Image 1 (cartoon, one colour):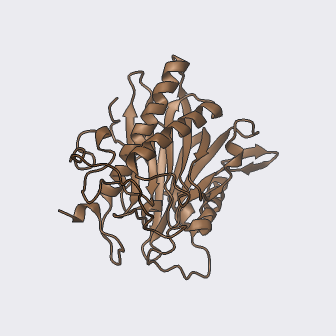
Image 2 (spheres, rainbow, N blue to C red):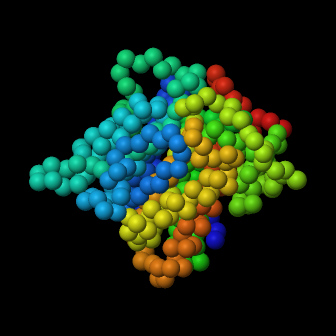
Length: 328
């Protein structure tokens, strides 16, 4: 495998990512969309998720494709970002046809960033407007680190952020990952700057430090955030033609990448979740081996994307945590 030309989830042809954030709020929204509906699925492994319209992503549901996927800050308030995205898509004439009406299908997930020092004293929920702005900003290039849903995020010991990575398989299929990192666990080993995801790094995409020498995870780590202050939400995507059931298997496999890059992950206090998206542009040449490789690539891309989120974070006034790049 090799990274795609951008090393972003938008290396999957047809996919676009838009982001919007509010510096005073210290929060934001990230939207994945495409020029046409795409197959989507989801798998939740964290103990404290916050979601919208994820039930319809089961393979036995009527609607098999979605118009966008939303990652948002704001805890439960951030679910309103999906409404903003849906309103904007409806204005574009997008959505599931029901008679003469169009109903955009916009599942989403949120993370908790309400205690990050931003101004949360709003009188009107700001996330619908942020969702609309993010959708209108959708493009093939987008900012990593302190942006979108990752604007006000944190990990155990570094600022979090938005991360992304991609891979092109020998078969020609492309896989990408997009993550808003707000983990209870640590992305680096002990007190070092070495990333747990180092064995899967491509080039020096997150510093090129390599694995930490002779370091092992803590045998009994304690949570360093309070309940509800965490959650890592992600999307893995491919140009392969997948059913919802096959896409869900890719989402399940991608959680391995989260566990490789965050220690510990999937805790009762995190709402860790992975969406899967498949545009259907390329048929599987070998359903068995291709599906096997897609799951592995999704996990690898997600691990790399998580490290890139921390690596790319930038310092902002009022930060409660330091950035990875600030420590020599």
